[in-house]
Image (tube, rainbow, N blue to C red; front, side, top):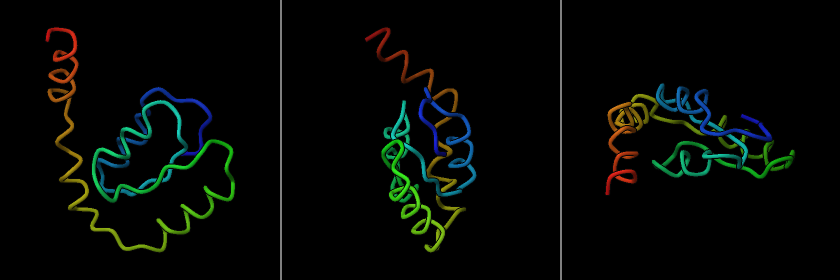
Length: 91
């Protein structure tokens, strides 16, 4: 996901929930999403074409256990999200 601006991109979380490794630019909540679990892919600086190319090459060259990745990432449900937000709103 080569983007100059995002909040919390659904396309990234949907891909990760399917076990698809991703490469995304460092915008919005992308760094936090990509750091939430191991081996999700890579994050690169915005407008870094060489970094983006290298990260894509690495992700496309590696073998990933997509089923296992999907299992790990699928714990982030709407209920999990609501409970996390409520911790901040109602400590």
